[in-house]
Length: 222
Picture 1 (cartoon, one colour):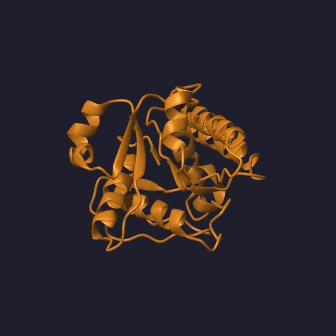
Picture 2: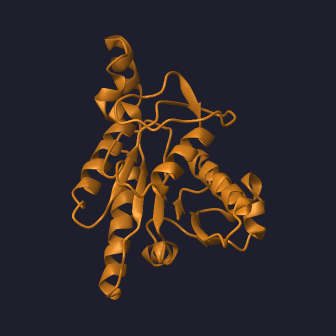
């Protein structure tokens, strides 16, 4: 399930999952996407509208009925809802996290054998200082100040999701700079961020790798 499927990260995840499914020799699973605008999806990735494997749910994160339908029966949820404006009081990431948890709690209450999906939360490197430790102090200060409200929202959402650890597993993906470029390759790390920028497609590939991992080494990690 992809939330924020028409954003830069969400659409990249969708494209890679679609290509992955097309290459599969076995029966590929369906995947659900939640979008606010069908016309935007048609403009960005028209293939999705004709693909029977892609189940499209149109609505907002605050619509619990639609959100529960989208989450129902999923193995992984990519929380890729994001904004780029550093507006004071921004709570989009926390609002999304809270809405997802509430929807999953409702589904759990309705189903005896409910198995919650793994959550893959899009965040940003400046939320965890260990990923900025090799940068000069003035660079760290400049980066964090420029997007302070966004990072505050991401940090609050992370604390909230960690408070649900007793029944929900989350992987926090914290990229550094991002660019609109080709897919060149990625590396998941618990200790350092990438040098320079990576593409949204590389970010998406990393999030998919974390989602597919069954060893648990990325669970509840940054």
